[in-house]
Length: 615
Image 1 (tube, helix red, strand yellow):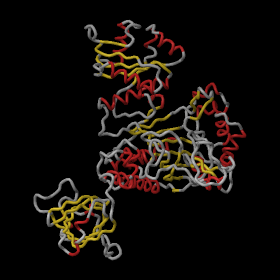
Image 2 (cartoon, helix red, strand yellow):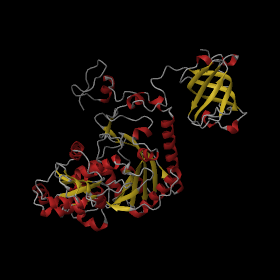
Image 3 (cartoon, one colour):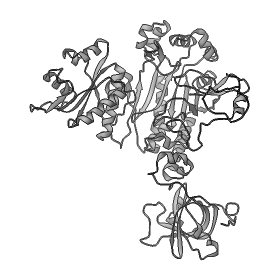
Image 4 (cartoon, rainbow, N blue to C red):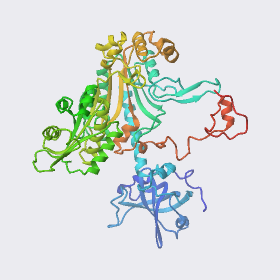
């Protein structure tokens, strides 16, 4: 197919195809884009030209010398054309297209690039995800993905403008940095110049943004790239972006106010709604009522504490758990009393996947005296009147399904939270038309690792304890570590944590006490954080920060459940890139240059040189 070369260098694009409307009628336009569809109607050929703004119908007359290539056009060919915008004849409009009232009568056409037959139609949403990921560049041409990426850009721009206008300074921090323990595994990068040593890709710019506060930047932000080598979920990727914010001379309420205002600005722009003041809920209230610290408040199904109620039942399973300081919690689902035993067995499996050892269930109508009106997994172990009383507490109407878990507080909450969310989706209890926000505050500073026999930081080791608990930390009173609350806060929307942060420790003696509480010796603390500890000793302002997940925020505003939809080139659940086939083996030459030798059976180098020494 010949190309005349008259476009791009000589004739410039005047409009995007998807931007044409009735008011452009009579105008001569130059369009450039992809062939989205082709229809041959005898003497005329109709094609749809697609670009990032949408598609428009173009009429081609192959009998014209300038249209000689019209009959050779195929899907995804890249073309340029000049033509006149016409209003479509009455009865011929396409109401499904924004450009459906007009068409372009082409006068000149050039094929800029031919295309093979694609493995799928660009806007076919029935195509499997793996195939779309392998040909991601084709998927990005779709209206859906293109729209998501454009909205992501607009969200970031809105955030950047808001923070800049509020006195924040955007500062870039290093990607090659020091490995520091922050909860997840680091991605390590070997140094060629200093063999045997490694950089780490940052899990977050945590210490760096604190150093900027020490440096007097006062108000910092960054759209930061972060990397964590951890197991993936639908809303998690090994590399991601966050809106990173830090402020000096502030406390918790100050930074929460700035970010609450930012949430209001974002939702006003992209949802057209005024979310108003965001309510606050303590960590323990969230766990007790909803089973997790990022509750979806779009439906009202709540958990109940039954620990006091079961003490007189004489049921050994409950008694043993309570004796070990465990809890008994329940969830009542009104109207679900007709569930089959097979359906309930699936609920039991769901609870066990969340760590529960079992699930006690009661179903039916507790108000009925008819035989079989109410059945239970514990009907032989607990008197019927007491079973009815438990069921009535969880399902006040008496007719429904009661689910009870006896275990540690965390396990009972986690398993019933999973069941709560399941019923929210299955029974369509979630009000999808609304967004519900909540600040979660008063987190525990520490969580105890039973297997390791030690305390870990619930967030990270730079989070400040609340003032009333400062002495417990400084006195290293480990028996009371579980009492310490943190100056930490998470912003939750629709059951997703979209932002989280804390007031930081700004005194070197408190930071040293924190490292000691986490089991770091003075030598270990100096090795890992010596530069940071020294910086704290040169005059550090009180400061606080927060980080929003750009990907998760965009996912919510695009009304999709998969974070991969809003990332241009995402990884799979196994942290692989199907398009580029990364990660991949590297040559032995590269490994030798880095001073690295792989363990037997790991990877395959391609060069013939002898193995490098082990690092």
